[in-house]
Image 1 (cartoon, rainbow, N blue to C red):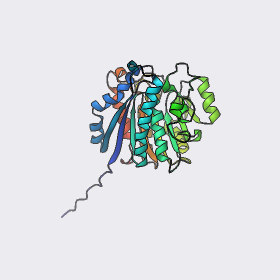
Image 2: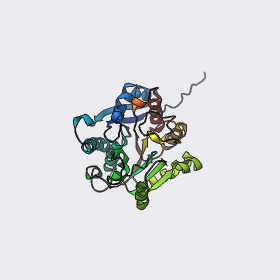
Image 3: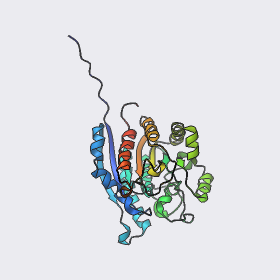
Length: 307
């Protein structure tokens, strides 16, 4: 009689997903509908089909411009609530995903993550974006808050946003690495250069390859920190592959390369969460960007088989 040996069961991957339905930090507020469209489009079912125990933890709204509430008040209120939720998840050592909405929500996401880690040590962050997002109110040509989250997380900008991490800034400049930058103003470059934050421009990504660049970024994010996260502005990708975004910049990252790089991160110790921002469903006529967000999440959530 032949014995049948069963293959070992794959470890169940678990993720708590939060929607950040905010468009007040952007010129086009329709990105606030991103979390709703993703959820209604079957995101949770898709993740569960892939063996992921996905839990929708709720969608946090921000008041629209029609309410007359100032953008700073709307964004800071959303970030405060989002930060409290992320703080709890990180303190419980659960993996989280935040889906935006405009990228100003990152101030809430990573301020909360820094608070959740505070008893263990600092936060590290890998930031993928076509832009630096490092404007101060006095240097921003547009005044839009989604161009300021990196500066706010480093402790510079509006008090209503820089104070959300509690005592001191959410991030130290030596613990963040920006990847894929190709559209920025001189003031931002001078600001980040003065602080010593590492910026890997798109030209360098092309020259070295995303895997090598990501390995360097990971080294920055894990050195001297208690945990690290990844924040993705979808405009980091080439707009031919992610059309559902409000601020497209040509010649960006390839989707397959980013998926592969995220798969390489998900076995790394200390990976606490991911954020995907700037999905604008009104600009995603054929659903390509929504499908890509599904793929990015599946690639990144820890606990799956080794790629």
